[in-house]
Image (tube, rainbow over all chains, first blue to last red; front, side, top):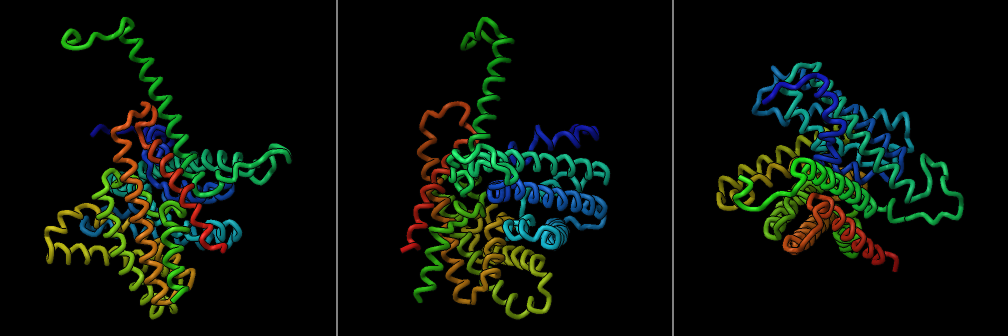
Length: 219
Length: 191
């Protein structure tokens, strides 16, 4: 495997390997609690905190964790941070905590977090693990914000609770209901697919301006 | 008895774990390409859910009353070790079934449906029987969603799909439509 630079470790998770939009990890919270922007932000911050904290601890302890029980050890570490986040949110923003409900506790089984521990933090020095966690966490936040904005603007005609379109706007209720989550992410992925298709088409045209002959002539 | 039946029906259709609460999405996206594997995954999930409901009831009744802050950690430890034990038992007693289940069994540990079930069960204060029916309903709901999705995907495999929809985008749109359809079941409870 090619050695990565610190900058790559940080940038990678934000866009090119975005956990939600590209790798489709951690879909559960991304679909369930993005019906308003404040919920999306709270969930994004909590996940960011848990990811960074556990990456730091896993990376520090990597030489002491026997490989046979490593998954259980990671889950225990993650669960500890989730408990902290749960209690802090309950104390600071009780209303949002109530709305997020069980989904805060469910950060424990967010495969994105466990995936970063297994694939990265357990093999790298502390600094790199932190950079990677910050990058992936930011990528997750960006995805949450995109989904949250899209759904709140269409579904309630407001953003952060401020009305956008005046009173004649008929909100698309479906966007803040569960199907809206699936549809929003589906549309975002379709848009990405369309863009990628155009992009690769453009490259092909530049490389072979006269078209490509089929069969053996190419070889 | 009527209440138990409604708990089962509500968990299965109205508050379907996958399509309404977004729990257990990983297997929903990952192993829904074939009807047969989807069905098997669903059955494995029902089994683990039922056993979890028993474990959670024991934990809640006898241990967690003394230390409520340990709830999350003890749930995840119990689920993980329980899945591990099931895996070893199946491997010992029925190697064929073990091979058929393959990677699905350990993956159930990190399936948010199981932990989500444990937490909902506690939050709603269900007793032993109620929890059991809730588990069966939730499991049947998961299986139903998985099998429906798999049969749609098997059919769309042979359809000509635009290039931009050949990734998961199409699957998510299908899931959205299924979820929309399942919202119709909410009408069961108003009458």
